[in-house]
Length: 189
Ligand code: ADP
Image (tube, rainbow, N blue to C red; front, side):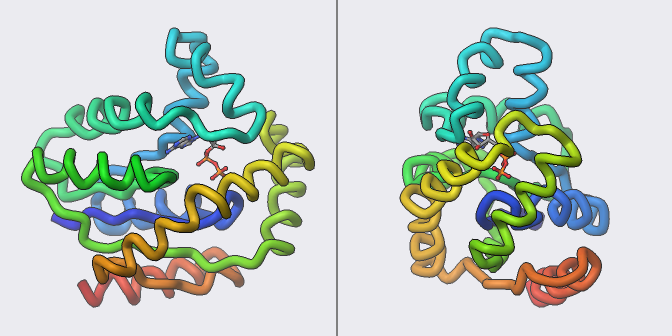
């Protein structure tokens, strides 16, 4: 099995690239952001709970995450592996994931870190706001998401560096170029 975490700031292209990776390697793509947006659309209990966090650009509380992730994983029979997109986002989530993987007899193969500078990211997110109208893509919320990323999520790069699992990949350029760079790294594992 290969289990990949795709890691990077909001707007780094995690979503796009993880779908492509999942397709090419036959893996199951799990995006916590997509799960939350679906729940919000369906106005489920979970959706109602998480909506205000997401609209402010805050993180959904850690204790909600691991059960959701587990539920998304166990739905699949005999998967070839997973691509995690948008999870983990805090050290707590990363330790919870370690425990869950151990419980399931699985291992994280690789953490791909998409490297994109802040100016590029703000530009991309504002453009996405125009195109898709995602309610968390306006300027104030974008700034908050970036701050939350720096404060809570970025420290995970070190966490995975220490475990010798992380690989930094240039996230600037065309979608296919970046995808090729990612595949080159994956193919080494
Ligand atoms: P992006 O990375 O582009 O901001 P996502 O779709 O990954 O977009 O996430 C959108 C929002 O969903 C986040 O800003 C956050 O509020 C919430 N979210 C997604 N995944 C997590 C997570 N693992 N922990 C906490 N909140 C999350």
